[in-house]
Amino acid sequence: MRTPYIAGNWKMHMVKSEAVSLASELKSALAGVEHRVMIAPAFTLIESVAATLAGSNILVGAQNMAPAVSGAHTGEVSPGMLKDVGATVVILGHSERRNSYGESDQLINEKVSLALSEGLEVILCVGETLEEREAGAVDAVVRTQLAGGLNAIPESALSSITIAYEPVWAIGTGRTATPEDADAVHASVRTVLGDLYNDGAAQKMVIQYGGSVKPDNVDGLMGMKNIDGALVGGASLKADSFIPIVRFQR
Image (cartoon, rainbow, N blue to C red):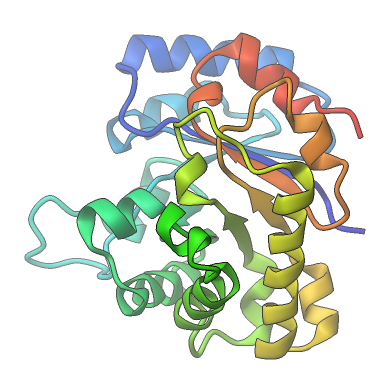
């Protein structure tokens, strides 16, 4: 049985006072939730949010990471820096990093490998654009991104990796894949993982859905066979929308 995993990606939102206030509210409201919960604030907020959530059941993550442990990398943040301020998880390969900042599968793979070697858990994002979906290339795109992102990653490391399927056309648009459509791609993701590793490993992996997840659609999505969690964007910025998502009903 795979443990559900709900993660909130705060993206480039909030200043410290807002972040601490929301984290405090979540800490109280989500106490006792038995499945996994994570929030990923902006780099500048991680230390304050981690301190606020200390002793709680909520993990703290980062939204990106450099593919290097140190050096002349202006504007970048290393895995050691993330761990030092309290992050234990990092989101890699998000569509906004791929499409807005040109991150390749090779670069993402370097980050995945380094994060794992440095003791961070990884959420690896994959997903197609609207043009790719309309061209019938969803499975091919997802297969390429998974194979690239997981290149040379051993099966023994998969327990520290979560896959997030995020159709790019549904992120921040209000459009959401139907539960059935999303589940079909999640099943395809699991098939690819089986091909890359083996069916036993694939069946153990948690696959999140990300794409305009809201309180009014989370139950339908989480009721699907292959959907194990959610990577939540805009709805994670307010307690009154994120809390009911975390407390979904199957």
